[in-house]
Image (spheres, rainbow, N blue to C red):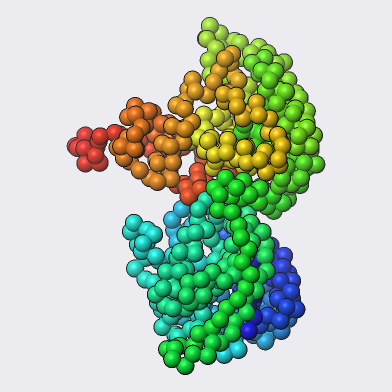
Length: 572
């Protein structure tokens, strides 16, 4: 038999569009003589639906979409993800998979493990599965599971998240294959973890696994696809594209081995290679995430404020690749503190990428604000207030362009700045999408170099890459006047935010205690800024987005050399 893996890009809530795409993929699979097509998790309604699941009309529309899919499939069986109602006690819904064949729903399988860590909150809506139902096609029995149900590898996690292993329950029914329908978000390096999770299940159960993953961007999440099939010996036999929709096939043939305890199969398919380079994956993911965010939110064009610095240059390059340079507008807004080199770099960047560019000086607006505020600021020295006014003038200009022309404003701040609050509310933070907000500064430089290497020419000016970073909000200003070197800042940020290390552990990595204390203090006290930031695209294991749930009004501070019990004693 032939099995198809339908790696599709869904849109949350576009049930009609999602189902139509599934029918198109199913027709292509049928034309290729496949007997079964497998789609990703919640493919009918899109993932993640979040609190749309609290709307009865949304759930009903999703069920209607499933029934339309069932009634209009060509003569091919399908596994489709959807939301089902729970008629019994517990939470009102199930994260479900339907086995569709011959115009009927032949079997249902619900998701067992409902994650609540990082960006996930599935236990809020869904009741876990308690029964396990295989499906049979052409004499081959398939055991079904959904995404998190395979995330039980004890070697990969310091502490197991779950007491139950759903795959053990699925295997008790004697399947010939395991299928996992996933919506697993991208994070740098995660593609290898998924395959190791599957290989662990294969080592335990001696069963081949078909893994179908979602692709595309929805809000801050990016799904990288990379669906695959691994045979019962642990060999990769088929693999789909990364960051693109794809339809791939495997041919399954029974093997003649009477000595085997169970049926065995030879499996063949096509393997599409992809890069595991961190920089390449980050850039490709951000292009996909930007394209889908713009498109799915109803925009077609973007506007980017260009400073002549590395962050705005990389953001503009990503936007140009995502929506095309004809749909990007660059605006340089020099002040009297802006260097001519920065203005020239902005113009060169726009010319190299081929997008429209305008220069709008802000000196007159600065003088106007100085005049308007002169009475209330009488006898007070100029300070960061006037610096922030410059950033806010620029934010006002970009939002005016957005209002008048309908362009989506892309903010240009990186993760290092966002972490320590080196950004201005309603200024450079002003916009609709924070494209590189999960890229630490040193990775921004890596991406810039990769953009040039890939193009085989200087797209981002070398002067932009090589000059010391500066906000240029006062004469002679450099980022390093206020921050530790970015290589140091990024190391501490990675340890504290992504690895959740304590201050003492970070010091033992070789960082100076006073620098560690300063950085983590800044991270903790700038939560109020991050809560007001534009949505940012997630590419790391821990972004400042929907998976970062820190309170704003809180006074807990970690200190170097102070154990938790010591802090409690101070209160007593």
